[in-house]
Image (cartoon, rainbow, N blue to C red; front, side):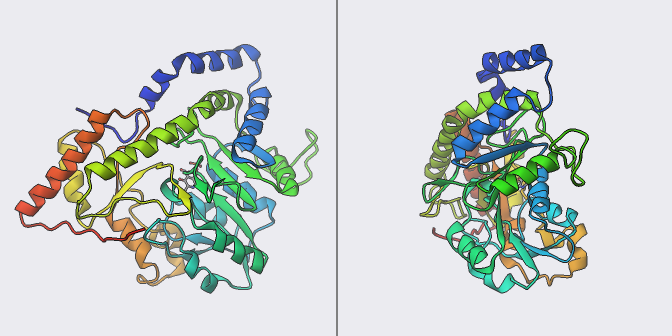
Length: 382
Ligand SMILES: Cc1ncc(COP(=O)(O)O)c(C=O)c1O
């Protein structure tokens, strides 16, 4: 049985009629950029998240970039980001000319450790970007309190967590701005790139709208340098269909996580948990184990995919080596990069596949014990 990490074709087949119709109607309309579907999708996402404004852009990376630029963050400024996230979180900071200041993660959630934030502030700090990594919310209350107290912006990287909740409120709606990605494999993914800035800040919304179209409100009359960064009509039409299924898909993701928890109970390694404040949407299901390669190899021999997100923490990536962080500066980020492994989880996954993955993992653990290789995971209770 071949089991991929995510099966986008199975998802398409499950909603083919609706999707084909949506695509057809865009083709028949002759409008492909910033038309009715983008406007409607922006309203629908704003309603879904409980925010006043949503601005469709070309990608999640651009959502971050435009938010930072809209807040006037640039050369000489610092922006606090977790040391362990997808590169784009920091890349956007660097692209506006600011410097990312890394902070270690909380090993229980893989999100920025709010307890370490205070020490990262300098007079040059202009913003914090908490990332709701893997679909689990960062602990926003202390982050927002610190941001407010210091007069800096909180920009949520919600690329992996649409539908997740922090104390009953949707992630992305809690900070000054929220950034979404509609990369195909995301919980709400298009059939191409796409992203969105969401906010209650009207000035930010107006600025982001200008920035996405060459810095103009009125065509051919730029007020500043902007970008060409728009969500297109085809993606918006597809995403409108998919948004209607998002809660059911996230519900199934949670159900699968529960099944894994039962099937892998008693394993000697760490399974993902949910903090008391959180509703996790399991963009990825991450196990943490010292010798992940043993599990990965055995799963591969069974035709089961697994993945490493991410093999290096940000401070060890080539573009940030010049910042010369000590190798012990972010121990939890480094440990996560060495020990985490994503196993298949997608809403269309059938129970027999979930059981096959779990039994493959149990076999790997058993064989490694037989061969004297010890699989030791850390036990961090939430
Ligand atoms: C945490 C995080 N931030 C930012 C991004 C960037 O989004 P995109 O690929 O749409 O540019 C992604 C997605 O890949 C992500 O996972």
